[in-house]
Length: 245
Image (cartoon, rainbow, N blue to C red):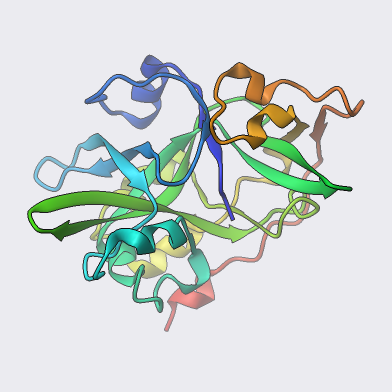
C-alpha cells in the first residue's frame, strides 16, 4: 500500500526527467495524501508527447454510480489489474506516471506510529506506475488516478509487504503507450532495486495529513539509524507469467 508520498523536486528537474512541459506551476510537496490533486504524466494520443495534468488521487471508474468509491481505490494491486473491473480497462488504455521523490510507511511502537521515508539513495526523481480514468455526472467531469503496488523489495519488507511500482526511465514511453503489448508490460511491475533503496526514520510531524514542509522529512531524534541502506538482494519474482494467458 502507498498512502502518502512526496514530490519535492523543482519544476526544471521534473520537466527534464519526464520530458514534459508543466501546464500549471508546481511547488514542493512533502506530505501528499489521497483525495488531493497530484501531478500525473500521460501520453497525448495525437502527438505522442508527454503531457502533465493534475488529477485527484483515488480512482473513480467511468461506470461508477457515484464518486465515493474513489476513497477506496487509491491503490491497485498490479497482480490483479487485469481481472478487477475497477482497473482492467484503465490498465489496458489509461496508464500514467506519477512523479515522486519518495513515499512513507509506518510501523507501530507501543501506541505510537513511527513514520519512515523511503527514497532512492541518489535522491533522484522516479516515476510511479499509475492508472487514470474519467468520471462524469450531470455535466461534471472528474479525472482521477490510482497508484499501482507490488510486493515490497527485501529492504522494505520489515515496514510493509507492499510498495509502489516504479517504472524505469527507459520504459516510460512503452508504459504510457496504450499500444504496448500486455506481455511486454510485465517487466515494469516491479519496485526499485534493494541496493538503491534508502529508508529514514522521520519526524512524527508527517503523521498529520494537514502538515507539509521540510519538517515532514526531518530525521527523527528517536534513533541513531536515521538512514538505512542495504546491499543488493535477490530481485522480486517476475510477474511475467501473469500476462501470458
